Image (cartoon, rainbow, N blue to C red; front, side, top):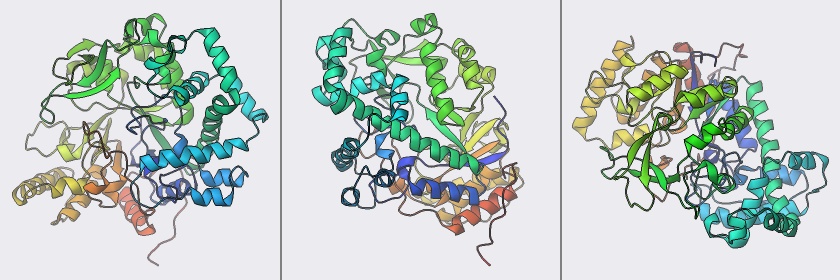
Length: 513
């Protein structure tokens, strides 16, 4: 893996882009966002997982880890292909504001089925896409769910246990109505995503995707590969994932994802993981490896427990996995998400891999001089963030402070800036957000990534996710595209702190002239 050069990035998921159709898409707003990044001299666009979401709408709980989310399909492109009418497109419009997943689910798949009804399934490119077999299990899984609803462990036994004759007959029966429909969605998504990525790359922008460590229980991945997971003879999880109790959660976090059978994975030379990372290398220029610590040791909780309190740490695959993945991983810039409960084993694994870890500025100023997130304590092989999708926005974080707490926080932030040779004046909470951005960009970290909420000074009404809270997450959307003034401000900071892309960047017009 090549070392990440000194640069800057913006964190903004596709779903958070503005637009008329209820959720961000791969349409014109995504291209406009690329233009904004280019004008800002931002090299990296970091997103959350692209995969199709299941119950709960979390991109970290997908029906298939390698899928694309049909919600992101550009409907205007379908209209341009004569797959949707103008009236159907107009009927897909939704009000501005946070994503309303309930309404979106009811409306969007109806619209996509109308587009599919006009699609030529004998198209040679589509037939070639089908022939790869990449989404065979996904299409069967989604077709079965469309018929039987519920989770896959409630399918009739012949489908639950994947009896080949039964599945063959089922596929034949739903081939035109459902099976090809789900393949059509993935075909269109991949085609639109490839065009968007090519456009971003043509501007010198690299896209960082996100690889969730675990898969959802109710997924094509677990259904098609039960032997690779810790499932019992009834295909129920024996143990599930989470993290132990800590300061933020006295009962821990019970994620509930089925755990891998790492011994079986190793017997198969980690082929499932190789295919997954190989796919990621076609979708992204780099990846953030979510919950990296779970590859050294993972937290195993008995299935059926209501909290994470009775779990225990179990050894993970460690370097055996990364040695097997080396060829695939070398194609990508990799960030190790090493947040949370970190010990010497995780640190050694990260160092052996050579991947940069993460530092979060919102949690750097607790008064402890050995805080690993303090700019003075990080190395250049680090990706520094003001915050992540799981945190308060910077302004929301500051607004939750008392006057006394804010005074102490600002004093420590000024000291951190001074240690980096910076003196940046700030008084209000809004100005303190800008100071945090300056602190991140001025740090020695090779890559500084700013959530779009912090760039725009947005409060906690724009927070993306609150861990362990089941409702109201993943809904944040921009009301408008960032402005030329926002781009100019970022461009000045990127240049000031020597984070401009190395490739020649065409000069931008002076917006103040």
